[in-house]
Amino acid sequence: MMKRCLMTMVAVMTLTMGWGQVVTPQACEQSIVMPKETGRYLWLPIEEKAPEGKVQVIVSGMLQMEQNVRMAREQVDYYVALDLQPYQGKGELRVCVQNVPTGSVCYKKLAQNDDADFALIDEKFRPLYHHTPKRGWMNDPNGMFYKDGVWNLYYQYNPYGSMWGNMHWGHSTSTDLIHWKDEGVALAPDVWGTMFSGSCVVRTQSAQSGQRTQSIQDGDVVAMYTASRPTPFGGDVQAQCIAFSNDGGRTFTKYEGNPVLTAEDKDFRDPRPFWNEDIKAWNLILAVGQEMRIYSSSDLKEWKDESRFGLGYGNHDGVWECPDLFKIDNKWVLICNINPGGPFGGSATQYFVGQFDGHKFTCESKPEVTKWMDYGKDHYATVSFYNAPDNRRTVLAWMSNWQYANQVPTMQFRSANSIPRDLGLFTYNGETYVSVVPSKEMLAVRGAKVKQPTEACEIVIDVKKQTEIVLSNAKGEQVTMTYDATKQTFTMDRTKSGDVTFSADFPCTTEAPTYGTIKQLRLFIDRCSIEAFDAEGKMAMTNLVFPSEPYNTIKVKGGKATIYQIEK
Image (cartoon, rainbow, N blue to C red; front, side):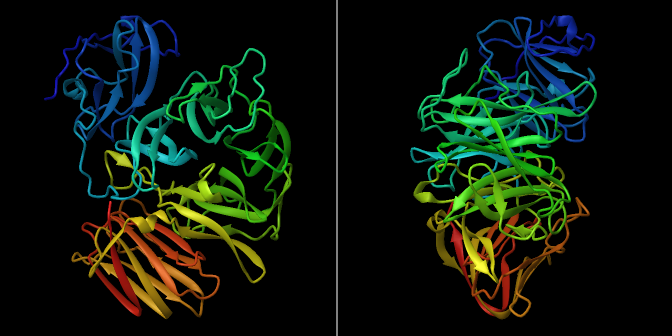
């Protein structure tokens, strides 16, 4: 049974404050004195169209936390949780609401209890076998690593609403890459700013501790992330920081010497450190504007600027973000996510293949050559798991597009990750490309054969030279896919797929080269997404769809389909 808390409301004036400052009751517009022992969570009522207010946590007169929250003014769309556990038992606990009118509905609808599933909405577009946050906004996958049989996924996260903002690192774990356990917030904003994208490494080499600093021990997980904070003159300052975990990545202690790397450049972010056995040192690749910078280090704290890559290479129609750099066989792959500039507008993942000597990356293709990892509209921020077993290069992507990510027709949560994929290399007409195949873990959830598509299924299609595939439902909504062996292309038309009205950039037809002929397609359907792969890995295409009811009919011309239920 929900317990509604007894609250004392005190109307006072507005005052802008910083972390750790003294806050008097008169500094809050609405001050809520939290009663003792009435529950871990204070449930904040949210209205998406409302302007942002501020919610502050104050303990014994000291400001502990401040976040922007769209507190409900006229109606409640959904609830988010303010976790009070870190603050309870440490003095008088006060929650202060700023910039929200006194008569707003949110003040009447606040609730406090221990129920983590309180008022959780059963949304028809929540995926059944893709990773999603239970509540709130998610974008880039961050800090992914494998250790002691556990896959760890962190992600850009707003716990206080399902639109971008208040960047934290959320955390989920899995033992099979399919079923994920919510581990809560791993990194929260601090005096250096909000937690932008970054990476984790598993420390296996001895490290220098440095003077007056914490020591990085063997076996520790080290997170490196971008801290971003606004300036008084507009824009923001971005700096690279690190944090340590000695419990496998569940909790982190931020380094007392942060930040470890700074610059005056705009868009200085998304660090990807990795141990380079070839030079017996750490390397770091970092996105800066429209280039990648490469650094080296012996201890993850002091970094030497080695080189830059990007001038004149690939696509430069947007900001370069979320890099990765790793070896497959005897070649190196540099992943460069870009926004905008994707092949069909908005965000996408490009990559370069070449050589890397620990100091400089050299691309083997001509500068004008652009290679895309996925030719759909909804595949971005692709990065790989550090320390994956069996020398695998396993990746996840954010399954959305910045053109409309804040507008997609979900409510209490937004965004999912792609299914896990394994990367390799193949050659076509003298060029080396990255191959993309569903990770082997996807076979483990392949269930019984069924006659018609369901809202969670895999469809395997043996194709001929000309193949057309139409997925549809009784409402007349449909997705049409076409393979043309003569043109060596695969297309997906989602213009009639369901709800396409929320953005003019959403209805579209995407087209991918197949780099030769293909024999078999694998389609993964999950409520609001379709991921298409050539079974040999030469083509991948990821697109969101929002049908009013699941597609339950398939028609194939020039091919044969086998449908498998996916067991969650």
